[in-house]
Image (cartoon, rainbow over all chains, first blue to last red; front, side):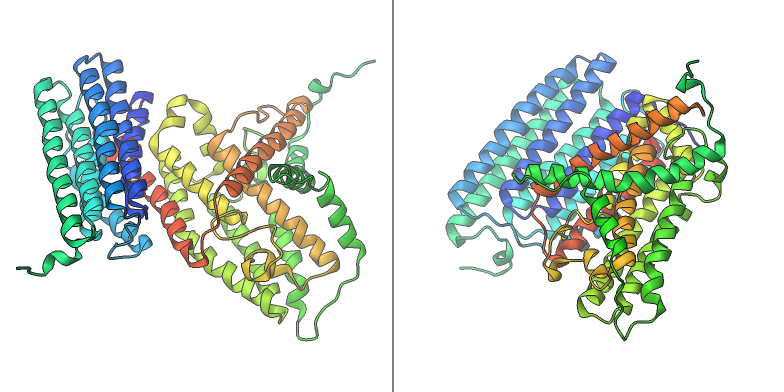
Length: 221
Length: 325
């Protein structure tokens, strides 16, 4: 089973790993602001991965996708959340259920599960190395860990958005030749989520003067 | 008649000895350059570049004081540690691309064990002094050493998976073989994890101030507080050697195994010595910059840092198994 991956496979898998690492960094980030920045960075890496695939495999549609996701996920969405944060003026997330080290260890276990579960499917693809699919699955699972462990609306929203980043990497692996309209539909789904989460953030903050979801389990009249 | 330096062939045993001698006599120089550079970085004039040599020479001339409570271990510790640091350079590619006769007597695990033995000997000597700060330092060094151990283990796993051996020479040769080896994710991740390990092990970040004089903030430095005279000289010299050994492994095994001698001609061996020291100084400069850019963490935040290093090492192995390796 020992083979050296080609330079192309190495670089693409490396970029996917970078996306996964920024997902882990979100688990660690104590400031809401830094979490949003990490999300912007992560989306930038996803966009550059799309550009790299487009340039090497001559799939022109991916350029459009990369440009769209650059516009939406690197500029628009982070900018929007930053504005909401400025209004809320809360800086610290500081609401993780577990300590950082334990959270990362749990996420490592979950990511390992994702790796081996998808690895045993043997999905092969023409555009990206198979390992990218495993990494994409790990990204989605770690995003779930982030959503579960954090107890504030912003982290959960960021977790959800970054989950979409994992899904777009997976879509690059299994369906990079897919009609552009499907990929764009994905992006607009994300926009809907942004609007929903934006409304939740704002209303929750207006009513309860906090971003924590801790109060959600109490019934109110 | 003129003798062309490049044409002289150094016997294999000579190269082997030169590996050890380079580390032995080059280490204080590298430390001196880094200390000088760091001082400049902070806007100070800084000590002379050769200051570590003067310090070591001075300590050798001083008398040795031993507390009444301590036994022979107190004096034996520094000697054992120094012997360990002299042994490791035989096992790793310091100057040559081709393995030297003693290069196969120990793998990367063996080198790790010998380095750990040195740390253990110093910690034991510190604990034997009976002084509170030295004991505190020993206890901390052993505790945090144990925390970083799983990361080192996974880095070794990654190396073993990539090369199917665990010889440092083999990884060095594998990386030199092609560009695709250099960018493969498992190698990049393992190298990054090892980089973090070296940061911790040379007392840079996350919690330690390696040049501080405040006893409470010390870890490695505190262990040697009670030593004096020649044993202290050996300890100081040993710690510069440990630093250069770790840099050498990082450079010649993981990151930039270029500039090594591929033949036994005197010219290429000399060139390799210069290249190694220059690369080590560059790496030390990078470490000094990192050290000065980031604030220290609180002592018990060290688990966060170690967890990230561990994450990189584990991912390296996982990515390899997922086939992207």
